[in-house]
Each structure stands twice: as structure tokens, then as C-alpha cells.
Image (tube, rainbow, N blue to C red; front, side):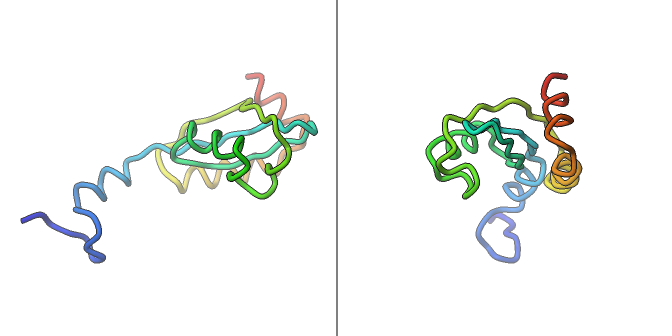
Length: 100
């Protein structure tokens, strides 16, 4: 019998694998030349969701969108901290970051 976590919804092995999942911080360039910064654990799906208008309220109606930068992180916590840092940058600094 498998070991289950407290909620009983997934095995401990599945839970451990999920915790090891990489996270990404990303910057999108919107059609109105604004930038959107976010985090996700599935970069391809998240960008597609943004392009379909179901990603975030901010990006809805600002298509076409371009992924101009992404950075991989080992966990959600470090990705969130980096997202906070990036959101405090100026647009010029974010564009410079995206060119590195």
C-alpha cells in the first residue's frame, strides 16, 4: 500500500517529485510595449495561457506577447524572491536584463 500525505490526494513520492520541480521567473513584452513579470512551474503552458488571454488580467488584451527573458529556479520560494527583485527594476533595467 502506498504512503499518502495528509490530504490523501497524492502519494509521498508524487509530493516529493512535485517539490523538486523547477520554477521559472519570466518577462513578457506586450503589444503596447509594457512588460509583465511572473513566475510559473510550466513556462511553455503559462506563456500559451497568456497568449490565449487566460494567463493574467494584465496581459489580457495586450497580445501579441513575446517571451523576452526567463530564469530557472530550484523552488517556488526562490522564484518568488527573484520576481520581487525584478518587479522593483525600471523598464530599462528589465530590458537590459533580457539582453543578457
